[in-house]
Length: 102
Image (cartoon, rainbow, N blue to C red):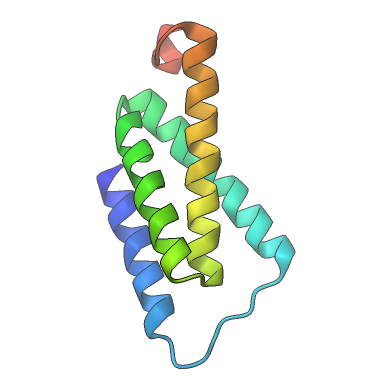
């Protein structure tokens, strides 16, 4: 998961350095944010690195508040979705077991 967070951070830094502003459609942002959030949830629960996703959620949300850009806001929202899914999974199972253990 740490590699994913690093690559996503690199993309967000590249967005900040772009000469032309990127103006994606709301559909693209919603779909990509949902897919990224779901992927982060499943990868971290099965890999037992869910705590990294929670730390990334806090970091990306703080960054998105300071520098609101489309990609950065989408990434922050995706990690919020992942955190909510992790919380729901933990509440349902009384902890964060791997999918293969359930």
